Image (tube, rainbow, N blue to C red):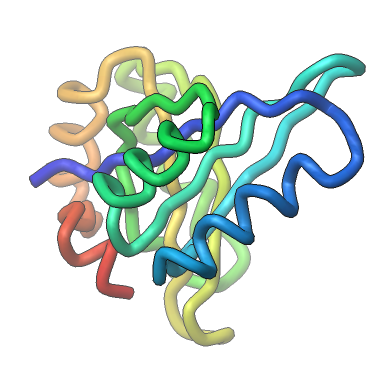
Length: 143
């Protein structure tokens, strides 16, 4: 199963982010990783959670605009140059990184990078050919 993230479109107003976390707390949704990008009027909150379908349903019931997006989760050595090796391989293959964010499970071991690519299948193939661990969606949700 491929990895998916939840993308939530939020008005850039005080308290709007708290509504999301309140919904998740009440629904038993655990956030594994997140990225928040904003403009003056709205933001996009991208999340890796333990249960995408429930999170999506709970948010939609409260009027949020939500989308599930396919992403690629890659284990990266938590050391200088870990990310660089991945980016070099992708650039050489002509794969564009649209955005990325990360989380570290235990410092000094491996980090997990979440990527959105212009060509997901090609990116996954390149990463696997280079011996990099692409994390299954179920495994990612369980981290």
